[in-house]
Image: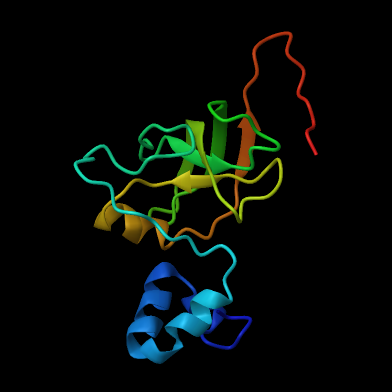
Amino acid sequence: MADRGYLPLAQTTMQGIKEYMRQNPQKLAEVLGQNPSYVFFRTLDDNSDGPIGALGTPLMGEYAGAVDRHHITLGAPLFVATTHPETRHGLNRLIMAQDTGSAIKGAVRVDYFWGYGDEAGRVAGKMKHTGYVWQLLPNGVSPQYRP
């Protein structure tokens, strides 16, 4: 949105984008049509466990990540080190590769799943920090590159 001149870079948070869309509803189709990573979700009935990931199981808030399955095997344990967007403290955690996403490309890209609901959405909307990720492998297993 910043590249197209809709918002200053500092305001391209989820909250900033939502506010822009509320103030400019006529631009909704135009903006969404330019974003290749925009995701349409479907509502699941009677699923209080949260959204279903690529493994076919509910995603675990703060313990799941979306990965590029060409580089990281679904179900693999990952260690992530980043910065919490609100506390600015280190966030170092073991998570599982439970989902994929069209905008997640490469071996060192993980989208951290904060959970579902208003609070998780608020925190996730502030996340702009980079970090580090390590895929954990059993002894004797060599990493394989899958182009």
